[in-house]
Image (tube, rainbow, N blue to C red; front, top):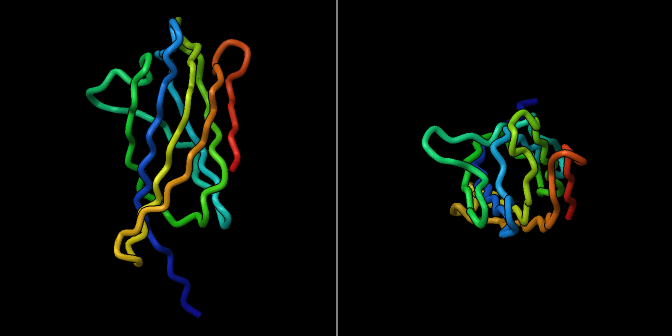
Length: 126
C-alpha cells in the first residue's frame, strides 16, 4: 500500500485591533488543527516587517502537509518583551488546493480578545 502526502500552501492573515497599545513586540506562535492532523507550533516571523502593530494586517505563507478541514487555531505569546499584551482581532486562513485548480478555502477566526499578561494562550474553534 502506498500512502501519498499532499503538500499545500496556507495563507494566514492576522489583524491586530485598533485599541490603544493594541500591538505587541512579543514572539507569536500558532498551532493549526484540521480534521485529520495538526501542525507543530509555527513561529510567525518576518525578516523586514514590524509585526502585530495597531490596526495592522500581517500576512504569512505556510507550507505544510494537508491537515484536512481547518477547525481550530491556538495562538501563543512568549511574553518576553516589555510591550507583550496584544489585542488580536481576527485571523483569516486560506487553504490552497493544488489538486482542484488551486481552489481557495477560507476560514474566519474572530478572536476579539487580548493576549498577554493574564492569558498567554488563546484558542478559537469553528
